[in-house]
Amino acid sequence: MKNSIFFFAAIAATVSFSSSSNAQSEPVQSVAVLRIESLNYLLNSEEITKVAIYELRKMGDFNVPDQVQMANMLKGQKVNSTHCNTRACAEKAGKAMGVSKVIVGSVEFFEGRLVVVLQMFDTGGLEEPRTSLSEFGELQVDNLNMMHIALSKLMQREYSPEAMTNLKATHPVQKLDISQGAPRLSLSGPRMGMTYLHGTSAEFITRAKSEGGHDAMPFMFQVGYQFEKQYLNEGNFQALVEVIPSVTGLDQGLAIPGLTVLHGLRSNKSGWEFAFGPTLTVTQKAEGYYDENGTWNLSKTWDTELMGENPNPTLIRLDSRGDYKLSSSFLIAAGKSFRSGRVNIPVNAYFVPNKDGWRAGVSFGFNSKKGRK
Image 1 (cartoon, rainbow, N blue to C red):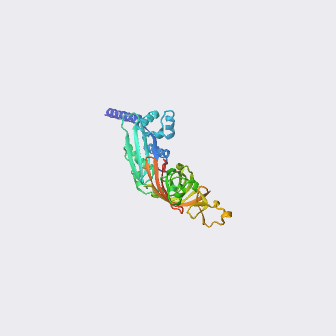
Image 2 (cartoon, rainbow, N blue to C red):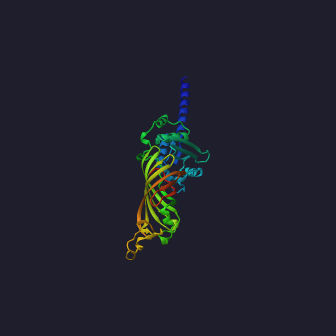
Image 3 (cartoon, rainbow, N blue to C red):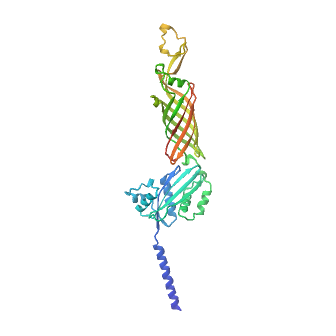
């Protein structure tokens, strides 16, 4: 009986040791988080990738290289990690790093929601790519818990209940406040368009050069650059200051410089914007008078020694034979920004009333800047 007990105990110990050895010898799966692209989000791509690496390591059963290790392993491999979002590129990068899986993805703040898209590729090409999409509310910007949930979905695991509880709680400090570096629409970039002149300004532009005009058309091309600074960003709206230097009339052989400073209100969600402010232009003006025939003449052409005092009232008006002077007006503008991928395309219309006649125009521009500054 005693021998039987020792026999079975020996078998159990052998089985236990064998199982333990097999468990210890089971290879740990190596997974590389190559790059998570940041689009209009408060963290840049390097920072959000670092968060993903950290959360994946916390799961405990993956061998996850950090960003420095990945950069060293990919050195000289002709793999551009910043634009490696295709299956072929991900598999090539994975083989170069010696990992079995490669994760890429993006985090984008869009239409009041935070969208996290992750893709996992099998380096050996034996498994089909796996994709997960997670959406989070505007007040649920909690990077660690957000990425934990997104990665858990991708790896087909149960995520921590505490992570979801934390996300369901509102975070007032994470509201869209510019002082916190929150997501915002930034539209600094080139501007171009057309302007139309009406009234005295149009008459000045179109009359002959011999009569003090420019012999041009009242439609003119305009080109410039918009610099903007957001100083208030709360909820879906932001207040900003825009400074726009421009040149008008290049298509007519002219170069009329201008500077516009606008105070505006923009919707981060829809892209609609309203702005107003002063606009300054440099124009040529001269002193002159209208004779009895209604013809415009310069005051300096009147000879007081021969004709005495000029009986016609004099005034200063636009004239290409005059001196350059600074003129001011008030501009009112409205528009909307359209998005195509990472490119913003702002389209605006504006109106400028003036005693010399109003002018109006449309402009558009483009940029590919992220919301983070």
